[in-house]
Amino acid sequence: MFYLGIDVAKAKLDCSLLLDPASAKRKSKTFTNNKDGFVNLLAWLGKFEIAPVNLHAVMEGTGVYHEQVALALTDAGATVSIVNPAHIKDFGRGIAVRTKTDSMDSLVLARYGAMLQPAAWTPPAQEARVLKALLARRDAIAQDLRRELNRQEKADATDTPELICQSLHESIKFLKNQLTRLQQDIDDHVNRHPNLRRDYELLTSIPGVGQRVGNSLLAIMQCQQFRSAEQLAAYLGLVPVERQSGSSILGKARLSKAGPPRIRAVLFMAAVVATKRNPHVKALYERLLAKGKAKMAALGAAMRKLVHLCFGVLKNQTPYQANYENTACA
Image (cartoon, rainbow, N blue to C red; front, top):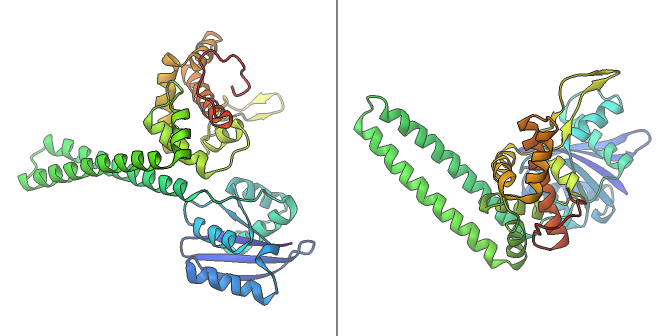
């Protein structure tokens, strides 16, 4: 097996092909991050008589820029691993790499693959990718709408020309219509695909999980592979981290906040509702408050509990049960 490290950027791919893991001997080259670049990358590998089935490519998850090359290599028959950038950073420190260049980063990725054998990435289904794109577009429109509403509020409080007020009014009306249409498109897309509809219904069977949380978690759990509820909570940045040295505790434990902040914001509001309406979350929240935990710390635990419940209903393919006492997913 040959290991290929790919440092992904918006416009280019810095690649390091590890020829000898022991000596870190490699061949490196840069390709454009587009379809022509993917073809050239496979042709370059062919010069070394490396078939895609004998290739393990390792790259970091970089927003959306890694997705197309990962799909292209997977379709060609290669094994692809998409790893957490924080893990690569720690690994580089562990092997005493001090140079920070795109070329060196790709070599670190290749060595990470050879030494740690990360799990293979499975491309999400097409319907899951479409759902993810629709949700991203909805969130972008919602953000634009909030900005325009803020501008209108400012305009109402100042001496703003009528033409500007009219422009704001038309823009807000347009964005509201776009938001309504996109939400309808999301609902229609989920309803058209039985697997999405089934999982969405399971998620929203949990008190506190509404339409927005259900759609967001559905897209994440359809597009990512999580082996456990703890792994999902860690991805969302909901696990507590603590700094301690000797007998000293350096500050209070806090949430890692390593995942997407937009999802955490949605989950926070869902957790507030769940502390009143969800028996499992409510019991945990009240127990922590009774022990003297701060309200925000208890809400963080409530968010984590809600995520565990979401993972549990999808794993077991069973709707939420209020009288379920087994806390294996708690």
